[in-house]
Length: 198
Length: 198
DNA sequence: AATGTTACATACGCCTCGTATGTGAACCTA
DNA sequence: TAGGTTCACATACGAGGCGTATGTAACATT
Image (cartoon, rainbow over the protein chains, first blue to last red):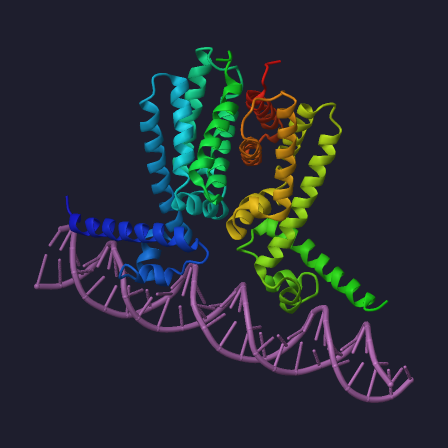
């Protein structure tokens, strides 16, 4: 039961670094961010960085995991409020699109993340989120609501479509207008999985 | 008339640099590639690089444009061999997935490209490819084959789904098996756009 | 209280990028 | 064809940025 003050402090410095990184990575991008500046911004030096996260990539990984976790939690919360499995799946997809409108998510999770850390589906958090979608698809399939196809393939294509929709929206001048179109198209595509048309 | 030998030589060096960059970028990634090494690899120095492409990003842009152009051409060729508009759209989508299996395309066009150059839909070539898909969707819509939705939204979601499918396949150990599942799921989703089920 | 541990700072070397300047060959002119 | 000019590329230089090796002071253990 000792070393409590120490680990508390360490947790705080980790938090400060991650928080600063979220802001700066989102603004200037990963490559253009100097770790000297980043650490100085919160009154530290690179020493703290390399001790806590190993290297620059490690910091990005921590940031990505944090954001990704928040996204998964939010999507799950939205999905749980739906009346049935299908609506929940749709609601999660739409929520995913909406979340990806935040510059933080765009730049860090969708652009720099994959380039620096590699295939997103290997990340722990992303993997969890996808697995949840896979299970939802499997449930709906077992209920005969959607056609028998590979669940993982379906989940990945859905999330891919949502992701790309978000990128499109963010690059556009009228996000709200485009969001409506994107959501409509997303629902339309997703209905291709339905065993019986509404 | 004049300066023919000179511009011929310059075209050759540009070609050598782009060719080398395609290989090295695909292997080690954009960030990890040294321009000193890259240029030395074809018997040049960085002087040639900065003269021809302005900076490192300029070289990546040239590489991306070349690959993207090849992809668009291939997709168009595949699509033109189909009997009808719908089959052509499906064939192009599948072709897109298959092309994205090449490490070159994955690493350069799908990972580093967006991170370094920004939104892919702004790139000249990618934009052309997308526009072609949009027009195909509009045609099918005019024929009453697919439901009336926003054509650009549909095109973007389709290409997004295809893109993500490719990333999935490439990260997998059994590409051929997964390819089949992905293509099946892609067709399934796309059929959501059909006005009348087959 | 003495010793070990650790969280972070400091200091160093290596590499890479971009620019500024040099150079020799190809080009135009007469 | 001879002289000057242009230009494609090489060389030289300076400015960071990353990662590591080492230092240090606060904390923990006994």
